[in-house]
Amino acid sequence: MSVLVYVEHAEGKFKKSTFEVVSYAKAIALQLNTNLVALAIGSLAADQLSSLGTYGVQKVLHVNDAQLGTFNAQAYTSILSDAAQKEGATVVVLANSFSGKGLAPRLAVRLKAGLASGVVALPTLLGAALSVKRTAYSGKAFAHVKLSGAINVLALNANAYPASEQPVSAEVVSLTSTAKASDFKISVKEIVRASDKISLPEADLVVSAGRGMKGPENWHLIEDLALSLGAATACSKPVSDAGWRPHEEHVGQTGIAVSPNLYIAVGISGAIQHLAGVSSSKTIVVINKDPEAPFFKVADYGIVGDAMEIVPQLTAAMKAYTQNG
Amino acid sequence: MRILVCISNVPDTTTKITFNSDNTEFNSSGVQFILNPYDEVALSKAIDLCEGGKGTITVIHVGEASTEPTIRKALAIGADDAVRIDATPSDAYFVAYQIAAYAKDKNFDMILTGRESIDYNGAQVAAMLGEFLDLPSISIIKKLDLNGNKATLSREIEGGKEIVEVEGPFVASCAEGVAEWKIPNMRGIMSARTKPLEVLAAQSLETLSVVEKFETPTPRGAVKMVDAANVSQLVDLLHNEAKVI
Image 1 (cartoon, each protein chain N blue to C red):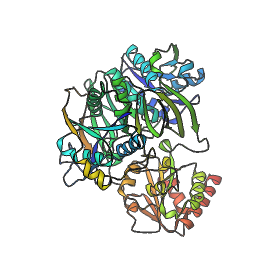
Image 2: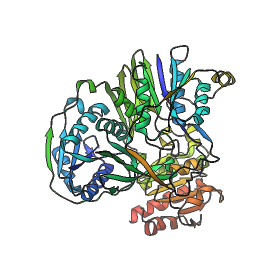
Image 3: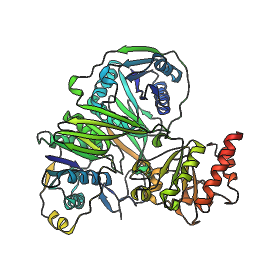
Image 4: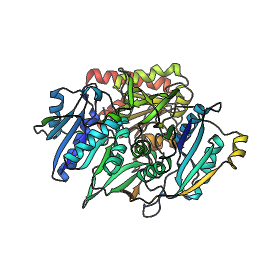
């Protein structure tokens, strides 16, 4: 028996969300009184792989060849399912990331496993089954799902479980790929990364703005505030619909759901669809000129005032704070 | 070209979500149900691809008879025919299994879904279909171009995008931005009434996931207001009280 965690990386480095996923999987391994095995696919240096021991991984399986440098849902499913069976895994944990969403469902079908995605808390053990809390209704509710597969797959949301160090020494084992030739029907032509931007779904801090900004020409105020905090930028649906900002920044029920430590909403009234996408934020700050804006009802802190005046002041105060602190 | 678009029936985005007294079931009384917005954008993309008689679109839905207005809406927007698998869609595995059972001998060139349903938010059906049908699957795409038998798709990744190419049949789940939403016109609405809607029995299947209970988020405490003349106080509160910076 074991718990298997799939460790995602970008450009040869593990992401913060990967350490969250590993820490979560470690906690489950402790619940089950068993070992934690990690599986990494693609090009990674030996010291990166062994660094997973910091978070309690006892064994790291590494699979790499020329075809595995980019994500391939079918090939990665073959490798992951074979590893899960070989290691006798009863629980497989992945990030509920974009790639995780391509991988976990295929894996669940291949392994005839129970699957819960959007998981936000540790499972409760119910004999051989487990019950796990996941988001539902686009952030408006949670569902407790009972999984009763002989093996179960959990896909953990970003920022839902804190990474915690519990060092052990990790044995790194290189394995040959078990992917089939027929798995490679998709070819990756190009990967475009906005290197100067912080990834919104995983961000710790988010500055988001709405129609209260009056037009795209005022967005430098939002970008300055985000820069002063090291935050990702986001926007409301009307703003992305109007083409003021790209769709990737749209937070809400039909956009991205975020769960940062701090969500600052500027000039967003707080329609129910928007609130759904931000409800799992730890702290919410609302800046709006309308004291009756519904967003204030779900905020932790609020300022009533004109965004054009308040935002630059807040940016200046943040800069003063970071310089002194 | 033949495209299959998978659609689900979900509570309207403005719905206040409540549950029955023991929190085991969604309280649907007075709730307006709609075509899942992401499925609608997938359908809109299919319509763009088939424009000018280049193909036909079948929509498939796993659900009870009460969901037929949503299926008719999809036909009004522009699907050519529809299939309803008569069953309660208990989980994504069940839904994908039913759709795969229908699609396996139909030779669709492309199967599209929305990125996720706005009620269950599983984002699972597309990749599961790919696995059941042994087809490549691309989850959460924002762009899809066809050039003969070759499709170029842009898939979301954290902090960027990945451009992929695939030849032959595939499954993809669509996010907003992949196409402009289509609004049904009067001719579409009229013709939707008479377009074929086939109802098929479901295959029996043991499901491995069951929702035991629901929970609504705990409400936050009262908002603490900061004076607009003293913005730096907010920074203090975020640092010392909320401890988020």
